Length: 227
Image (tube, rainbow, N blue to C red):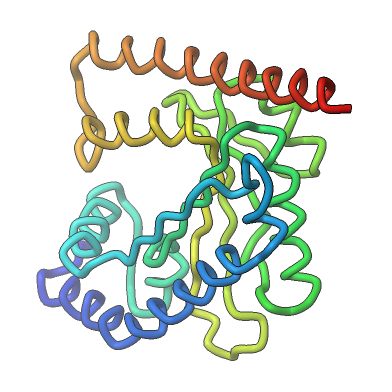
């Protein structure tokens, strides 16, 4: 049964009631990353930069409508499990080998009951070599025909009964972030049908993958030279 405008507005209002809690948790997750000495010292630092985002009501309204149009049932009981990117943090690093330290940092926070994982992390990639890389960490991988590349974690407060509050943490390289920003600009919220643009994005994704591997190689050679 299709939701009415009133139904959609009631869902948006439900988020509004908890928005401050999402904002506070998002800030605390960002603080954990930015204050960790090991992640933020050295040349280059493990974490290059952080970007946080709290979804506003207008964008939530559009996302609910897109889900409904796609045949999904969204209601008061499942709003926060259907839409898990209300609070989001991007953790950007310079080259792929730095990912291991970020992954271990998140696992350590989960073990120490700072956070809990709402579900197991997933690595989105189109590249079979990247898929093999993430499997080393027992991370589930999904090959994306869109050429999107990122590792996603869904975190919630470990010692809080408020299970609806979730922060989506996306971990990716600067190369992958550049591709993502370009793709988002032309493919969101409505996907482009321009064949040339789609082909150029495909080519760019391959250049991004090559750039990430070359960056790994540059730093490996540099580190050997320092020994």
